[in-house]
Length: 322
Image (cartoon, rainbow, N blue to C red; front, side, top):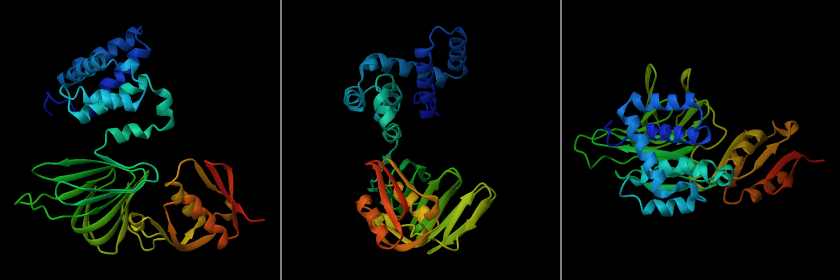
């Protein structure tokens, strides 16, 4: 890594130290720890100086929120690349926008991601190589395209990738998707990748996908779905939900547990959506549209012995029908 461009993780560390010192500036032990961190590597000191410089130039103490931060950023992008400056601002806005951050902390992550979607939002992007990236609700990715590879890092959520041939490079660069559990390589097709806390789920709609996981390399083709976790790669024999239907604005279920269905619908709406234990194992199959999750929930009492109870607009619970 060139010292002229400190890595984003180092910039975030510098922001972290700045915030800690702001709150505990009179702590000599903390000051000494920060000095040791700065002296440990030239990149650390450069990131520290840039954070301090940007802080002074933008007067970040006075920033009331993201809108002002972004507007100010447009007037200072000569000193730092826009994306790097956003990373700095995402930490600095903490100083003056705690209330705003409490409402939607993940908005900060969206600022620092190359592509992102909000809760209930589905977005589509055409990548530099012609591939099409679709993001499901509350998802974020970063791109790392260079002369040797085309890499997509799935930071959170779910994505569908329609692969394009690498016409811009004679040698051909592999098209890769990275998650915490595996490195996936797509070949002239379409596949869905979903990141969960303990695993990565992959469903191949067309073509083939190579899964590079610790100690193994496996190939999967059209119609196959798999799970990758700390124990390895396993083929899924039965799916209770169409993995790619969300791209069409649908949830398509096949004998799905009601509790699992409620958890899935909850991904597309703000607030709390729950299900009583005594109806959790009820099963449902059908096609449900995602554009209005309140209307979707009102369909359930037509086929199941349940009722939809609204404690508030943002607190909804399914209970057994009396």
